[in-house]
Length: 266
DNA sequence: ATTGCTTCCTGAGCGC
DNA sequence: TGCGCTCAGGAAGCAA
Image (tube, rainbow, N blue to C red; front, side, top):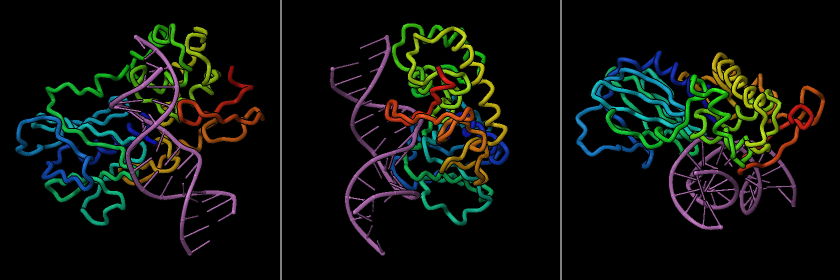
């Protein structure tokens, strides 16, 4: 389940491997995976210039004014290979380069996508996003004013990409645990110091996870096909016992599993 | 405006 | 061995 740290790790890997490569073709293996979001006729995709991340979106810019916008959703993987040999089982699309190297888009559950836009176009899904969790715009002042009068549980709002971009189920669980806030607590009932802690813990945990190449629970892999290591540092998600000795409670919230410690989180 | 439910999909894990 | 069930979850779409 790629969230901000996993996407950032993929971006790093892409930067190391495909900058400067000329795209010869983009092949869709499973229909619906790739879509061209502009009218004009394609005359080549150009050469990759820049790769960035906004929230959980990967933006691959080319020198002919295109943006390839990739979202991995739950099981999407971008795997770079020097040659197009040994295609993965759930290959949904591939990008071929002039030097015969390839970028595979492998996605078991098929929710991921590659959308291609002109750089001048507005990208609706990205325009909707709130500040990136690692940007200075995601501050405790910002979050405090967003949460004001909101009745939804704090967890749901942290998962809402229009509130803050980049967080998913795993990191929200870890952030709320470290901030000592119960996930089901209504947003408007949070104290100012709790909001401050949430933001502070977010700014701590995400870079830690990036340092460890993200979290691999089941599917996530970086561009080399390697797993992350941050799963070894999780304290609450998927755990049964808290470090304080208390049993961890597991509930369903908004259709997602939520883990918390009723002793450590208030 | 906000909220919360359903949908998309496949593979793993489980009980029988 | 194999069947059927449940679960995992990001975000869009929709209903209240």
